[in-house]
Length: 208
Image (cartoon, rainbow, N blue to C red):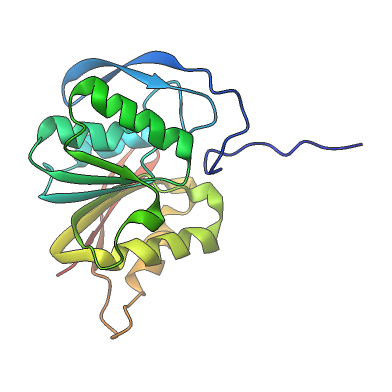
C-alpha cells in the first residue's frame, strides 16, 4: 500500500490545489484584504508567532531581509510603514512568492519589495535588518544551515529579529547562535532575548 507524504509549506512546488482566496488582516495599523492559497505557511491568517514579532519590531531600516517570507505579512508591514525602504523577501515556496508579489501589487508597494528565491540574492549583499519567523520544522541542521547563510550578512550595526516558540527550542537556538563565528573568527553578533509573549521568544542578533 502506498502511503502519501504530507505536504510541507517549505516545499518548492506545492502539490495541493492552488485555490486562491482572500483573507482579512491588519497590517501596519490598516485593515487589508490579501490573497492566499493552500500549500503555504499559515494561509488563513497571520500566525501567532508573526503577530508577536510584529509587535516588537523596530521601524524598518534602509535595507531589510524578510527570511522565509511566506505570503508576506512581515515584508508588507515594513513596506507600508516605510515605502522608501528596500525590502528583500525570500522563500523556497514559489506559490508563496507569487502570492506576495500579488499582495504587494494589491497594496501598492511592489516597488518597495523585491520578491525572490534565496539563490537569486547576490552573495555579497548585506542587510541592515533581518526579520524572520524561521521554519523550525525543517529540522535542526537545515535550520542552522539557513541561519548560517543569512545572519553573517548583517551590515555593521545591523540587527536581526527572530521569533521562535519556546517549546520548539528558542533558548537552545540562542545558545547556538551565540557560539557561532564567521570565517575570520568574528562572532555573528550579540544575542539577546528581548521579549517573551504567548509562548514565543523574540531573539535579536546585533552585529556590533
